Picture 1 (cartoon, helix red, strand yellow):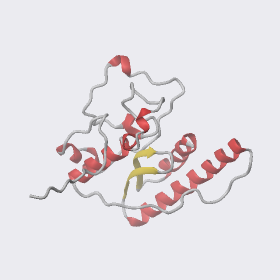
Picture 2 (cartoon, helix red, strand yellow; picture 1 turned 135 degrees about the vertical axis):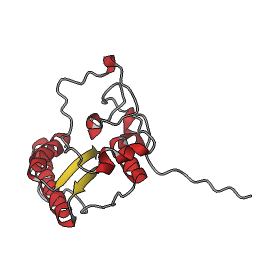
Picture 3 (tube, one colour; picture 1 turned 60 degrees about the horizontal axis):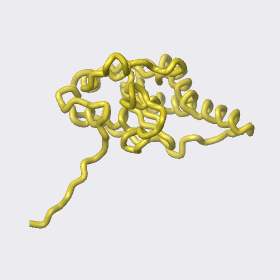
Picture 4 (cartoon, rainbow, N blue to C red; picture 1 turned 30 degrees about the vertical axis):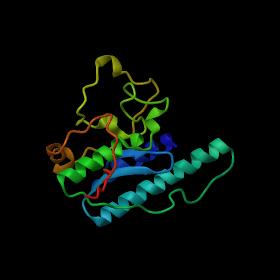
Length: 184
């Protein structure tokens, strides 16, 4: 499925001038995207093109693996959009997407990048803003590994603005903070 999604990204991204997928995380049952679009129409068109391309490739991969033709809906719903308008929102969204495997505890699995620091099914390898420094002996990638292609962000918030907030660590577990109420 990862190869199918990667192929869909390669097919869709070069064609969309006003739509960019700048970060992605592929999980077992869903995926997360951070996208930029010039307007609502470009967002809808870009996401529709990606979903169609990915669905065709996922159905083909599933059909080959199961040796039975599989067609039809891959994504159960369209998508949920959250506009990111502040430094903190963008920082938290970046951390959530590129470290989402830690939230799902998939980081305990056998396959990872950079000695367990990065999710191989997310775009963390292309993220240039990590707080951590990776030692040279941990930088070797598997020979057959191909990272997911993503677009370069054009907005200030995703490129620079988020850096005004707390740095993002490779071992950070994203998610909402738990609020504990204490009776006084």
